[in-house]
Amino acid sequence: MLYFLINPSTRRKKSLRTWRSIEKDLKKEGIVYQAIISRSNEDVTDTAARLTSDDEEKTLIILGGDGTLNAFLNGMIQTKGIQIGYLPMGSGNDFARGMGITTNYKEEMDLILFDKQIRKIHYATVTYPSGKTRRFFVSAGMGYDARVCYQAEHSAAKRLLNHVGLGRLVYLVFGVAGLVKEKTFPATLWVDGEPVLEGSRFIFTSFHMLPYEGGGFKFCPNVRPEDDLIHICAAEGISKHKIPFIIPQAFVGTHVRRKGVHQFRCSRAEIISGIPQYIHTDGETDFRYDSMKVRVSDDTITFLN
Image (tube, rainbow, N blue to C red; front, side, top):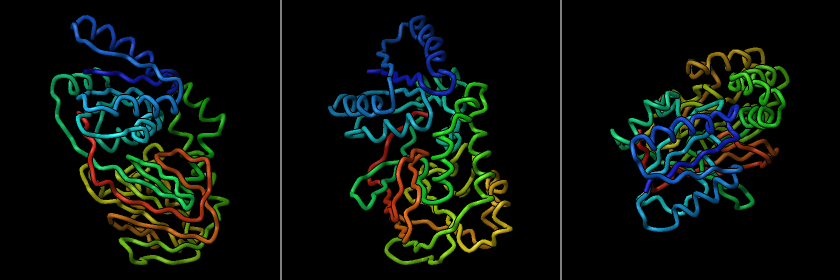
């Protein structure tokens, strides 16, 4: 069965307008489908649980942003028999950027419905000290990047920039502004059970399944979508006057050459700090913790791309 899941709350309700165009083409082609219009990310999570709780084979095409896709991932009960197509409609679109998915929805629909090239990718899971878990497709992080995500998501500026089609700029605006008054924090990073980095001047640590986050920052340029490893970018011990140069360089991935920028790969990792920090998963954050554990999934999810 073919399902479409549409999140109308994305940038300027782009997904809803796009869906109306797609629906006309489906009816013209005589393709049988079911459309589900969500009301919120919580609704997306509930829908994912319902659609993935049985053994029926399904193709699910999601119209939304990175947050919509993350909400769906966190609602999935099982992955067997599920194939996902994705049409990016958000402001950041880091998942699409990392997977090479275009914003040309007609081209992507042809690939999903008729070409059916299959890609199996891993996700990762964050576990917090409270025992709460959260899955992610793109990235998770502690520190500076998570705080920027929090400020961007709770700002009127993002709504305004989304309205004129420039929503991704909000991450750059808050990112640059935040560097001026960014405070470092002490932490120890563990990789596959071994302490690999300890210091008192951490700026951020991000864990990646895809290269980008924050609307195009290429923090882990060597990630490939089919990797079964977590890639880590940790910034620690960078001179304060050099910190502002990291963000422009991160757009092209050359920040990794700077002293104080560390890259690792692993199956599981943990960062422990004595001071609670903002933490995000795929850009979603509403809380602070002083530690987080990250582990790559054993199973994979099938995408049509």
